[in-house]
Length: 122
Image: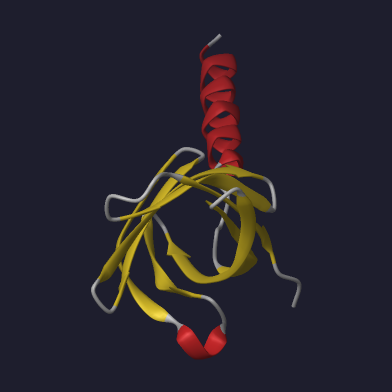
């Protein structure tokens, strides 16, 4: 009986570890901005390092415009990222689903914008 209990606990702990995705790498996609009745897709590139419970990295339109992530949290499949670009502060609230993250982006008092990024290959 004791063996079964220990085995069950080990299996549960192992399954919990498998659910925590490593977010390290490049994630590219777009922020969808609705302006004056038109929709504009702004490119976004996240370069993330996920070490245990800590998430860090950079964000920007491309590799040449990366800004340091100033705050990042990971809670199960929910990710929150903050970074600044000049006077503008950006907040990204994302949900991880495999190799894709979707959610909302906000800058200052602007309306919420949709964001979608996919893990880049390589």
